[in-house]
Length: 268
Image (cartoon, rainbow, N blue to C red; front, side):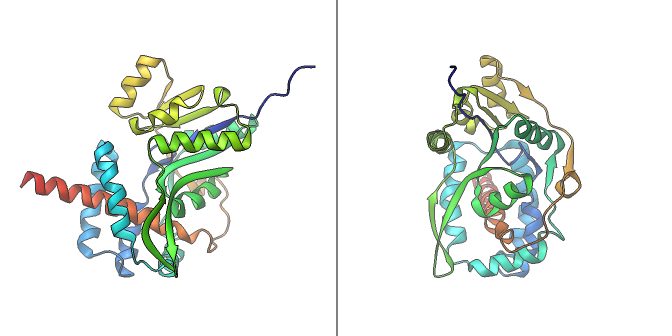
């Protein structure tokens, strides 16, 4: 009697791998109206978002992001964040996803694999998008909440080796055969995540990941058909469990703003 095959999974990074264009800037004005960020932050975030999408962020910048995330979110009222996003998510923010990524997710599900989204963005952002995409599980950065407010503490930072460790821990709990599993990312910071599986793929990779992929013979995928998620698949009706998108979006905006301001100071 042959042994029963262990289950497999497909692990996807989110930004620039599944999501074609960040929803960060779309949240800027609603958050300004809600008093969470300044008008100057709204204006600067347009340029800083461009810098992020074009150039990405290296390890040092990501570490600075982690510290800035703590400072930015400390004291925010969770319900205020939810209310702002509840009013804007389905009317203003319709995440642009790569059609090729959604098709690939569907293909993996059809093959019987679990689909796991693994993202450095906050769980408040990743979980509802994961729900929209039909993901079986998400791994994301988690912020601490006390007395209805974000404390500024980061309980888990889903970045670099932490992503790989989270994948291995999840495989231990769920019995995944990682040697037969798949992973997808655009960034060199996810190299260890890609190395954790037997079938790594570079998606629209940055120059460093492209170099590694070529050296190791990893497939390089080009996703170039962004579509509105709403038009690509049937979305559930708006509900408050989805409204927690805010923290991840604003954290990303604030991070990019901080990096841009540091660059300007260095130039000056």
